[in-house]
Image (cartoon, rainbow, N blue to C red; front, top):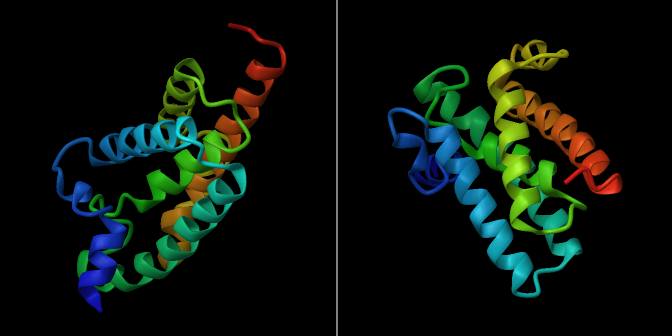
Length: 151
């Protein structure tokens, strides 16, 4: 069972990349999101996938913490969940996906506006919560950009 949680939490091994694993996982998520949306992927499935990544992230985050310690850099499912939240209900164009990636990575790395506090939550909740809030902030800004067609 631990193999399952290691595969899930590292997104099939991406988390083992020593530097920038979170960014690589976010980019992989963007590429998949773009590819599946362009090929008829629908919004209900996007919502289901996002919720599933959140649930699996909390569960696997709890399990692997016993092996790797609190919020290990190997755990990158949180970046995938945050990136999915960033892109929910956003038109799938290259410019919006890239803008979402930049916004999400900014919020995830800088951790402003209460994001850092959420990291302190216990277990898988702490692993996931900061990225969820970073995704929410990024999505709100993207919604404004889309609504006002800033670019």
